[in-house]
Length: 340
Image 1 (cartoon, rainbow, N blue to C red):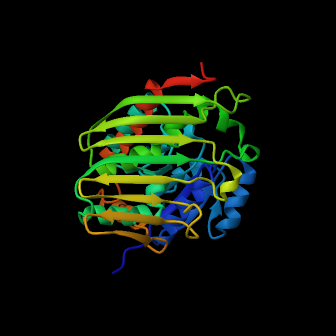
Image 2 (cartoon, rainbow, N blue to C red):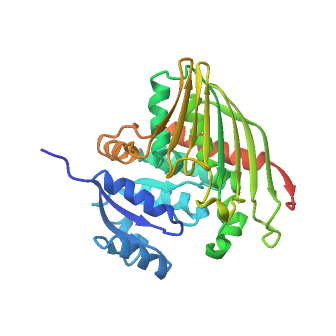
Image 3 (tube, rainbow, N blue to C red):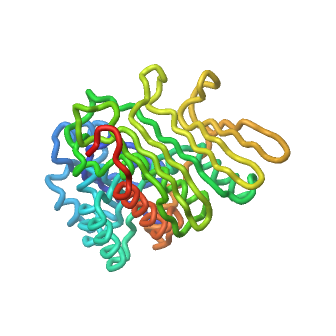
C-alpha cells in the first residue's frame, strides 16, 4: 500500500524563498495543508499562489494540528530558530530558509532540542538543493570525474533591490550579517564537496562600502576556510548591477586532483541563454553540460527521511556544522568600510 503524502504547513513568509521551499515539497508529493503569517499582505500572496491550503488563525493552530508533519519557514531570520524549536517540541520536523540561527545561543538551543526530540531540523540551502547544475556536479564528483576534491570557490553576488526590501533586511539583529545570510549557501557547498566533517575559519572580512544610509547593513563579505577534506574561499556581495539581467552571477568552482568543474548557476555571460551551465574539464577533454532539466532530489529525500527517520537529504551534523561556520565567520570577521 502506498504511503500517505507528507502533510505540511508554512509559518513565516517574509522571504520569497518560501515559494521555492514549498515547490520542492509539492513536487515530491507533499500536501500543503495550511499557512500563517503575521503580515496580511504576505499571507494573501501565499494563499493566492496555493489556494489548496487554508489560512490558519494563528501559529498555535498549526503547531497543535497533530496531522501536520513538517513546518516550513522563511520568516525574519532572527525568528526562524525559535520557531524551529517550537515545531520540534510539538513533534514536527522543520525546514528553514537559510540565514538562521543568527546567534550561537540559538544554535545551541536548536541542537539541544533536536537531540531531545529526535526531529529533523533541516535548512533549505537553495543554491545547492534548488540548482540543477549543482545536483549534476554532485553526481560527477561522486563518479570520480575530477578525482579528489581539494578546494571550492563559491561566489554569491546579489542584486540589492532596495525598493523591495523591508526594514528588517537592514538591521543586524534581524538578519544576522552577510556571512550568516548569503554565505550560508557557500559554507554548505564547501562542506559537501570537500567532504569535510570538521572545519575552521582562517580569515574573514565584512564591509559596508556602498550603503551608508544603512549603517548596520553589510554589503560585502569574504571567508577563507580550512576543512578536514580541503580548503575553501567564499565571496558574497550586494553589488550586482541592473545590466546583468538576473539577480546574481552565482558561481561555484570545484577543484579536484584530476580536473575541475565550474558552474554558472544563473547566467552565462555573453554566451548561452538560460541558467544552470556546467563546465567540466578532465584529463581527457573539456565539455559543456546543460543542466536545466536535471531533476532535483532534496524534496523527495526529505519526504523519505520524515517517513523513515533517516538522514538522506542532509545529515543533521552537516547542517549544524554549516550553520556553526557561518556564525564563527561573522563573529571573527574584520570589519571594513563603514562598519564600526
